Length: 328
Ligand code: AMP
Ligand code: MG
Image (cartoon, rainbow, N blue to C red; front, side, top):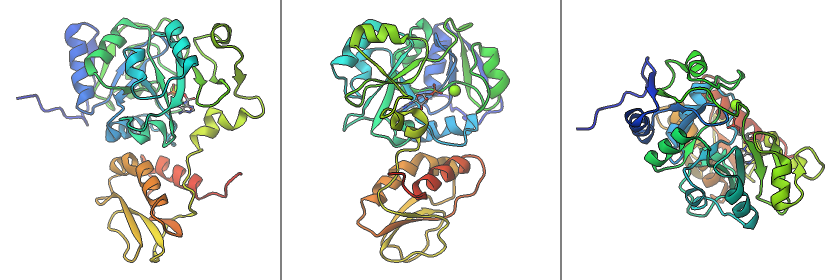
């Protein structure tokens, strides 16, 4: 009988990065628990990227007030490019700079198994292969993409030791795989290759010079034209095309209802975020719900109120952006 894992544990296991520690960490990740692990850049807070509820747990544990897109980590470029579409630039960069501190933003494949929440509902997904022996061993043992932002509470600095992670997230996550201090200590460079121009979204461990030597000029995220694709803006980009009405207390038959708790009667279409008003379940289903209702052939989307506690903050942030007047 496999041991039952209590995900909501008080204690956070501190695991050595030996064979048994890595096996334990991989088992926890496969069961949907959160495990922090060292990479060459900073410690990441990992979750199975194909499990939306586990990914929602990342946002809850970090206390992140919004859903920004997360990077998926892989043990090889081949594994990464099974989930996203690599063009020639991506193949060249991956061959030269992976494993390493370079993250590539690429279009999701139609059959991409990564949860929509991982990429904040976008059609693109950020992917990376870390240059770190125990991170690679862990990813190999998990056998699935692992979503991992930095393993700190929202608003605090990125951790570069297991002790930093425990100080912020101890008691909130299942385990930390201790592989000692990180060697690079700064985050990965994020490069958007989803359009014709390569756009630098975040400077980091891989230099622009090294990237340009391989694929030619890179636009900086701050240059005009590239501005719309800068991370902050992109994180807010996915919005349904239908108008969204917040805090609905009634609904009409030409509206699609995004329900939270017992659904209001009378809607033309309903997507239930969580019958039992569970915020983690609702977060996990939010982007799928917006997409489904957007395509339901109704006049607009009416969203039932979601409380402003825990993950409710990030859910409301996204709904408010979806309801705000469009910039373009
Ligand atoms: P972190 O997970 O904290 O290392 O941050 C990841 C960085 O990558 C953030 O700046 C994100 O906004 C950016 N990012 C991740 N995925 C995407 C994406 N699909 N499109 C644009 N930026 C992304
Ligand atoms: Mg961070």
